[in-house]
Length: 471
Figure 1 (cartoon, rainbow, N blue to C red):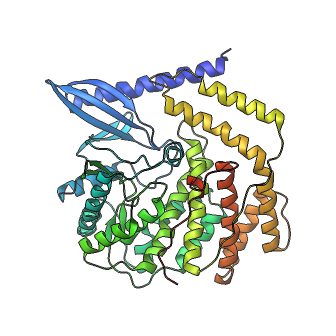
Figure 2 (cartoon, rainbow, N blue to C red):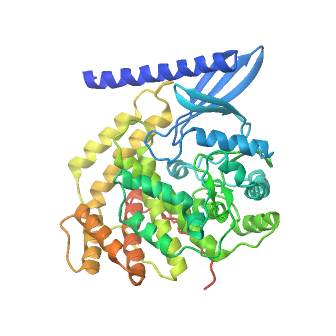
Figure 3 (cartoon, rainbow, N blue to C red):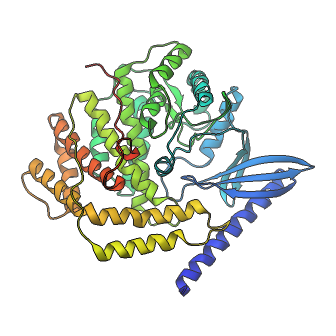
């Protein structure tokens, strides 16, 4: 039986979808001309519509790229469009920008031929990321393009509204500080991001002075055969240290199979004309992961419709744990291994949630409710099933760790987080190792819960950071 509330929500979703599609049709009519023949929404962090247009018998393929379901980016939508325009003017292969659509709010760019790895943790768990021979050839060429991007005069981007950093601290932290300030505004910080904010400030490389445009989420590009057809996803691009883009490859791999990283780094060094500063690259890896970690924190701080909530949860565990592993490499710290205990027995909850999962997976799909969206909803009760089995163990272990650090045991995890944040802001660098180990243990438990019992050795949620420093 469908309740009135369920019917109202379905009706609202359908009305929103109809309104969005009509807005796209109207924009195309007024700005491109011709008639829309297809509108398809993609599975992405942010709403993206593929749109085909027939104009005088010729097909024009467009992408309408909107804002994320929750507030998570400290830049306006136009920010990415301006960056595309600057890069296109400098002969960098990017999608051509057609303009800004107001309803739905989206930038409109050409749909470039080619494919890519999807880049989502949930999709990587569903389908292993692979590196084909052609994609590898394109990846090497992408490093040449990236070197060209980093050599563009940053003044061009400053004229488009990007802030120019001056001091070494600004150069290294220009991107991260925006996200951190935004988290503070939402009262959404947690112990890990508070510790990282302090650690990153304390360990800024003081000898860096070069300013470049930094894509901020590097390694995303389309390729057709061995050729790079377009550089993508520049919504968080900023002016800073170009090595952060190189660090992205370490942070993304092997969730996204980026191939042979040393060979990619060698190709970039040859194209850029400068050897990589490995200690700075290690620092920038922490920085990249910390920026990535902020996005799911925003998801948990806001009650929003739509989006991929389970993707946010998975990224919290995966990215946070790997950020601690990246710091551990720098401070030469050996981290702990943990395994799941026997599950807490919950027969009633098990049958209830499994029933819910089955019902969700049998919901009929449609243009307004595609298969991927149904799967993102079903993933939530599946996670809750694991959480019921192991959540009490994880909280109990975390409270034990807090007691060992603070000398007393908080009543619950929320209280423990509050006390740990206070301790982090008072602690000196001599506590770094203990805090890294504690935070790593917390996030590793969360990764284990998502992976579930008896996961394969190469499970995405458990893949560790590869080292680059020779101690």
